[in-house]
Amino acid sequence: MSTSFQQPQLRVDQVTKRYGEQRVVDRLSFELYPGECLGVIGPNGAGKTTTFRMCLGLSQPDQGSIEFFGMPMPQQALAIKARVGVVSQFDALDPDFNCAENLLVYGRYFGLRDALIRSRIPTLLEFAALSHKAQARPGELSGGMKRRLSLARALINDPQLLMLDEPTTGLDPQARHLMWERLLQLLGQGKSILLTTHFMDEAERLCDRLLVIDHGRKIAEGRPRELIQQHLEPDVVEVYGSNPLALAQGPLAAHAQRVEVSGETVFFYTQNAHALLAALESRLDLRTLHRPANLEDLFLKLTGRQIREGA
Image (cartoon, rainbow, N blue to C red; front, side, top):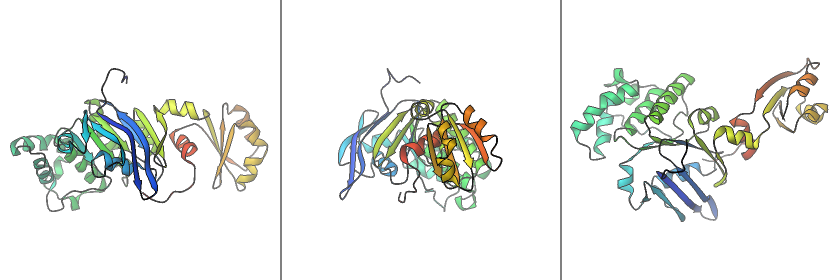
């Protein structure tokens, strides 16, 4: 999608947020254009949730500015929120109301007339595949149903822009795929989406562009396939063996541009896997997988393989 002649619906400019001496977000800048999905990915503690909260006006940046539709946040928060839909990381559905009532009550927060809200509820429940659950309370719904209800609720004000914070966390594969299908429908309708996710397949499927952040800083930005081509060798051969360090340092490494070890797996990154695969044919003691480089490889190369604690 070309953004050359479009004005961004969201502009984050040189935003910094400190907690004590720590810079949680460090001079971060990005833009979201009409009709696109921008994915924000990074390890735990990278600053994704803090950035999300600042965009919602729940936390003030120490430096920099945030604008939606040309309006500053938080100075014009009410006008902005009338045009934005939000699905947070954790469901905030009212357990005392059924599905239809959750949509009705939430719509009233925007000052919408009851007649208008009620006219939208059947369509939104159908969109969320919850028409048959209109009278059910959230406690009676599965995890996937709750997430779809949260998405339907976020659409009650017919927003131009959606902010989704890890919308499919905790869902089984079927529920995730149904959620992806619904999000792609919204993009097809011209809505914009800012998405944080830990699922690289989700990012690759939904996102027009990706923003990779670590330690509060932007370390890469671009289209998924272009980022993969820019930062990675095209072929990956995974080799599973009982002595991975010996494999990584042995003669097989000569056939790869880069070698990494994780657990019992050795990752050989190469421009052309033919020579490596030929060398592996005689190693019947090893299991191998040959595949193209993907977003998970990109993520691990840019942010490292070590486990991070924190939010």
